Image (tube, rainbow, N blue to C red; front, side):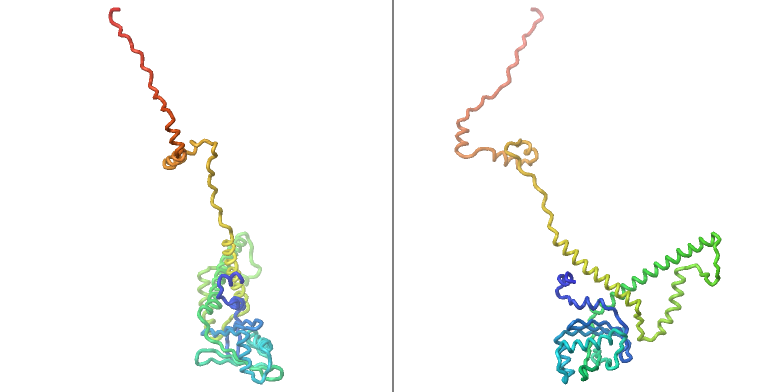
Length: 327
């Protein structure tokens, strides 16, 4: 989490915390909704959807205290006391199927501007306590991150599970066939099953199930406990992968850069200079030969005093005597 925040300073830490909470079906004043909420120490986040629109509200400590004082002028309490009571009465309404206690009343209404308002009434210290959730339409990025992408991941996971179960049924049919070929028989005929054929089975299942699915009420969301558990597993794995990537990136950046390869040191003075000259190009050889030549007055004096060495000529060949016919 810290690594992710370091990579993206503008990220809201509550966003990832809210992602860990599953969508829960709730019924508020007869209205079927999917709700996702997070109540911290002095702040909260609420997401609501009727599968036609998604609404959200986020409040910090200062905003909560200001609204509580506006709605409850007869109450004199600190912001912490207001929020503690709000969390106690509002959290069950948004997580436990919309159930409320005997002293808690909640209603929902859709405003003309497209916002959604939840009004809550309870008792605090013997006096009525009022609260309103002012939920506005959520941005597309929030909807995709909190609902669309997790649902697509769940769909892919369930599809792979169906494929795995189909392969398992095929192997089971092969096993049963092997038993039958070796003389095994069923003790009860009602246990007899047809051989599994994937394509006809899939078409028959869709043909039978779709009418039942569309016959359900339009506000029935069907986000049962198994799907909630699957959602929690998907988002937990995704969050772990997101935390792992920044850590790996940071580890790669902290690794020291490889040292350049060591270069060969120049030969010793007492070494053989001709051995290095063979490995150099002609320009380097010329520069080196010029560097070896002495320069200055001393060099000129030495060259003037030096006597030229006589040029050695090859010895003349002895002349052969001509031998005549008569000696």
